[in-house]
Length: 228
Image (tube, rainbow, N blue to C red; front, top):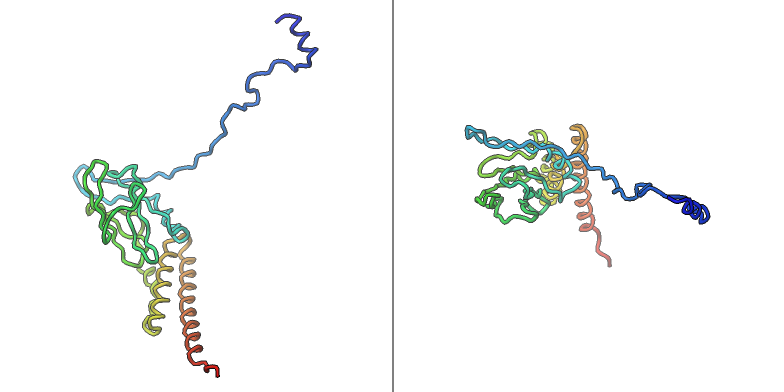
């Protein structure tokens, strides 16, 4: 650098040379990646024995069914790796359905014949007991465990509102079935056992109160005197 250049810089008021990207404007923003839960998949052993495939990571999703009814439950199966094999849980008026490649698979009565990654036809069955929103799953008669089964006392406690059908007629049966489905969803949700028992008791009580209130409303309207 010549002396004349230094003088010109001072006269023009230039602050001097700056290092390129001094303020790190060229850096991309940091992205915090979420932790992905590791899933363990067990398949056929070298001896040929068939073992159930467990989905530990799916339990968190099952626990959120009560809040997100449309959330699919993933199925980990090596023959469908990377294709989004999942179950769409049963709704109030719809049965559980198989989802593959981002779309509902074609099937009938819980039986779906689809092609694996190798092109082989595979039969997937979804079996529901009409109470638990999460069905049992099997791939070519190999059971797939996606969630723990409901316990016996959870079935009994959930089904108490069905007693309305014996004394409440058709209206009592409707209220009992609605409460039963809601109670099963609660037992599939998050929280302690004590909390679930309390919530399901409140649902059952609400079903009885609703039935009684509707009956009183109907009879009160039917017995009211006609206007002259």
